Image (cartoon, rainbow, N blue to C red):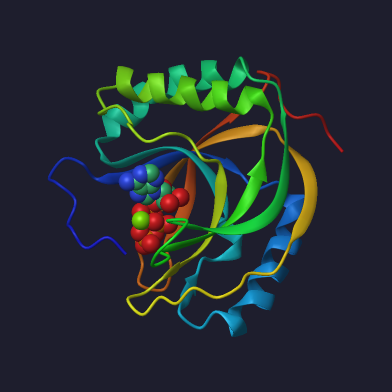
Length: 195
Ligand code: ATP
Ligand code: MG
């Protein structure tokens, strides 16, 4: 949980992400259930909120959010649906005391182009540039102060297509943050086909 209060005017905490495809959600939920007893120091995320962050925005004004919609829609339209492969567990940082537990993500090249377009949209709307490089991952949990490095099992949950880019609101809660879509942008510009 981030402790600092939102600056005045900046009423919405937001980020841009790819949602986890629904077909992979049960396997991610099962992975969290399986890991929970062996990693007592980890505060796991709610499985329904698992996502791939492309650009964190933080506390933001409502009009800034509105200004991001057109460039994000264009960025999504220019990107084909993305097959993502979920496999491998890891931590940030890689060595030393772990802070974040993640599931690895294999993504096509187009995902990096989409992330770069989201970055340009954010900077165009007045956000500071992100200086860290893009490491696509699904955050599963975070360690508290008493983090201990334990061996992590092999996991391979298979792959599925992502068809949407989402602008999410984040509400910080002690029991785990809640993410709500503020806007959904179809990848490839067209609505996802039925079935
Ligand atoms: P909590 O902060 O309560 O642990 P959270 O980190 O999931 O919950 P937010 O801080 O609102 O909630 O973050 C929303 C998303 O943006 C998450 O995927 C988070 O990992 C990512 N994120 C948060 N802060 C940053 C940051 N400074 N840089 C990049 N991504 C971030
Ligand atoms: Mg956070």
